[in-house]
Image (tube, rainbow, N blue to C red):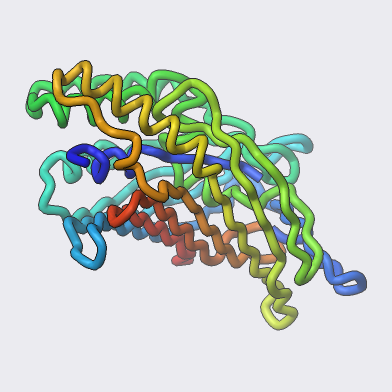
Length: 305
């Protein structure tokens, strides 16, 4: 079980799925009505914890301040800049602190469709080059085999356009999670989806349940939720295969499959979105567990002005 607590947090998933309210049939379609030059400032708080049963093994957090600016508002798309202006971190792990700081002053250009649904990161190559330089410095500073393996896994995220879009910039995926979709009040919709992961080129299958929980007529907002659960059997096979490869690389004893007990990965996403398509508040909680080992990551996005 030596590496399991570390590896659980490496599994990361992305899904791109505000609101045009129809009071006649109690539906809401998540649509962006944005104008060129509009600017919003958001505060993002990320909290992470690793536990063994009730014992807290580690905790860390980061606070971001981000300017979101509409660069283009065309008939068929929007171009939006994310500028990471301020980052405050708290952690006992020096590597974690360094990784958080990589994002300071980073500018990401996103392209969405006419509804505000995420399409791509336009300047992904620029981001890749910046990350390659940053990880090159970190690899010289942190040389233990265990940390090197973790660094390599994170570095691989930023090697490709898909990795950057789907897993490297998770708060952007969270922001646009519901954009482009239509929901009916109090009706749960279920679907099987494929989600990317860090440990294999092949996606995993997951069950997704979404719901329009509330329509607030006083402030023209909607409240939405989604619960994503990865297939436990498929996740167990993926983790076991990765641990086998890691043990060979590090020349350590091979793990036993029975050590991966009750392996689960769940992501709960909640969002309050106004009738112009701006996210007012969003909370995403990721919970990955194996037996007594639990990793919890909570990401909160809140509109400041």
